[in-house]
Every structure is written in C-alpha cells, then in structure tokens.
Amino acid sequence: MISWISRILVPLVISYIVGFGVLSKRPVFDDFLAGAKDGAKTAAELLPTLAGLLTAVGVIRASGLLEAVCDCLSGPAQWLHLPTPLIPLTLVRLISNSAATGLALDIFKSYGPDSYLGMAASVMMSSTETVFYCVSIYFGSIHVTKTRYVLPGALIATAAGIGASVFFSKPI
Image 1: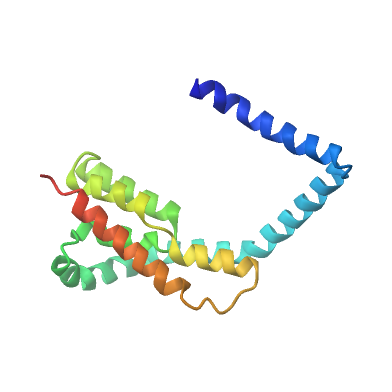
Image 2: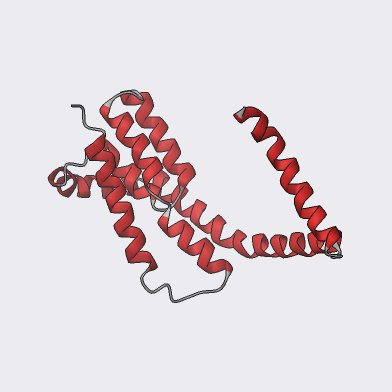
C-alpha cells in the first residue's frame, strides 16, 4: 500500500498544482519559468559560499589541522565522556555533511557499524546539523547579516545531539 501511495503521490501533486493554476486562469508555464529563473539565480549566488566551505573542509583535513585540533581537544572530550574517535566527526559535522559522512564511514570501517562508536556516529549524524553550512547558505541567500540567536541556539541543539548520541548508544 505504501509503495503504491509513494508512486502515485508525485504525479498527483503535480496534477493538482497544474489543475489549480489552470482553473484559476494563471499562466502556469510562465510561472514555472519565472520560478526556475529565480532558483537558478539563487543557486548561482550561493555557489561561491558552497565552494568556499567545501574547499575549507578539504584544506583542514589535508593539512593535518583537524588531527592537531582533535589532539588538543582529547582531554576535554574525555572529561565529557566523548570518545576520541568521535571528535573529528563532531567538528566536521558543523561544516560539511559529506565530509562528516566520510568520517563516519571511516569509523564504520575501523570499529564496525554495530560497535559502540559506530552506533554513536550514526546517532550523531542523524541528530546534529551542519550549523555553519546552513547558517551561511540560508542567511546568505536572503542577505541576512545579523543572525542574532540563531548560531548559539543551533550550537546548543548540536551539543544536545552529540550528548544524546554518546549517552543513548552506550551498551547496557
């Protein structure tokens, strides 16, 4: 039943939108083209930010800076009961989902997906957000420069997700 609903849902939604536009005597194709043009313009404006973030993550990983920062943070991480192999994942997850996915796959290869570290990495990937990426892309697309409480709130939520991933993944 769910498979049938998922196959029929997209054509149904498209038909509804087009039908509503035709019945309300809107130029549906012109509206579509205007929206596509605006979307392409927004994507072009966001491209430098996206390229900068991806380049920064690549440079940080390749230069060894990530490992050096993780070595410095291993003491406080142990005090917080955060396993050392999860430190790079927590830092990179703030910036890039794809780089964090690569680190999570490295944890899976080294420790196994069903291990404590594998489970914690999985929960962390699903309960945290790429804070700096989202703030820069979303606010950059609408040219907002004063984010007020967005960044502290997002970092607190991410810290809660990291804590939950470590706590709930512990073996009983």
